[in-house]
Image (cartoon, rainbow over all chains, first blue to last red):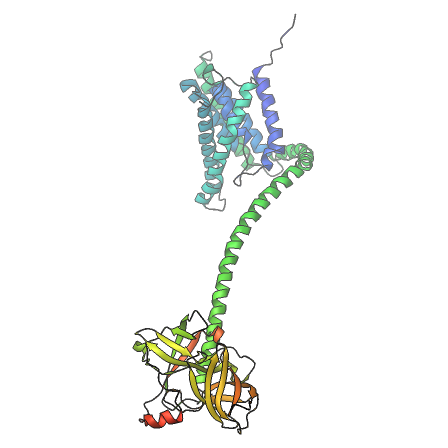
Length: 176
Length: 309
C-alpha cells in the first residue's frame, strides 16, 4: 500500500518561483540574445496565469514581480505591479476564452512581454531616464517580447510534461 | 459576501494592487538605507556567491559562444574586406594605368617641345588601338583620323620607356598610310616596306633605313669611306616629303663592311620600343613649298609617299 503525498499547489508554485530565481540569476540573465535576456519571472507569471486562472495568476505575478524587483535592483513595487496586472489579465483571459493551443501561449507571452516592457519603459521615460522612447522600443521592448515568446513555448511544454501545468484544452500540449 | 469567489478575487486583486503601489511609494520615499533597499542588498548578498560559482562554471560555455560569434563575425568581416580589397586592387590598377599613361603622354609632350619639328607643326596625340597580327607587316591602328586632321604620309612619332639609350625612348614611329574618318593606319619604320632617309648625327653620313628582314633594321647606302661608330645616333635627314629633318630614329649597334659591297652595313636599334607602344603623336607639318619630284627621286628614291590601298 502506497501513500501519495499531495504537495499543496501554493508550495509547488513557490518552489517553481525559487527555481526561477536561481535560473534567472545564474543562467538566463547571462545569455543575451538580440541584446536582451529572457525574463523568466514574466514568462512564468503568464504561464501560471494561463494554467491556474486570475487569482493564482495575480498572486504568482505579484510574487514574481516582487522577486524580479529585488533581484534586478529596480524600484521595488514596479514590476510587482506590472506582473500582477499581467497575471490577473492573462488569468481572466484563460478563464473566459481558455487556452486553445500552445500557440496561444506563445502569442500571449509575446503580447505580455511587449506590454510589460512598454509600461516599464514608459515609467523610465517619465522618471527622467535619458534616451529616446523609440530607441528603447527597438532595442529593448521588441527584442524582449520576441525572446520571451520564444522561451515561453519550450518552458510551457516542459511544465506540462512535469505536471506543473495543465495541457491546453485538457489535451496534450501541441502546436497544431 | 466574502464567500462569493468573484468578490474574493477582486478584493485580493485590489489588495495586491494597493500593496504594490505602497511598496513602490515606500521604495521611493525611503532613504538608501531603508528596509526595501536593504532587502535588495541582502538578497544580492545571498545570490552573489551563487552567481560567482555559476559564472566560473558557465565561463567556458560563454567563451565558446563568444568565440563562435567572433568567428562568424570574423568570417563576415573577412568577406567584406575581401570584396573591399578586390575593389581597391582594381582601383590601384586603374590608378597605375592612369599614372603610366600620364607619364607616356608627358614624354610625348616633352618630345613635342624638343624643337625638333618644323616651326608651326601641329600635333595629334592618338591611342594605339590595333596592331598587325604578323611580323610580315608592321603597322598599328590609331584612334584618330581625318576628322582630326590626319592625312596620308604624315610622320608619326612616339615615346616609350627608355631602352637604355638616350632620348628616353622618344623617336620616329612611322607614317600614316591609311586614313578613315576616325582611325588611321600607321606603317612602322620596322615594316619591311618602310624606308626612311636618315643620317648619322655625328658624322652626317647619309643613308636609308630599311628592313631587310623582319626584326632587323639597317641603315643602307652609307659610303664605306664615311666614319660611323656604334652608339652614334641616327636621325631623319629631311630628304623626301615625309619625315622632317632631325627626328631621332635609333642608335647604331654594329657597323659592318663587305668587300663585295660598296656600302657599309649599319645595324641600328630604334629608340622607340614598338612592343609596348600605346600612344603616338602624328606630326602635322606646315605646308612646304613644292619640291621638284624628279629631284626627289634622284635624291632618295625610296622615301616617297605610299598610297593607301
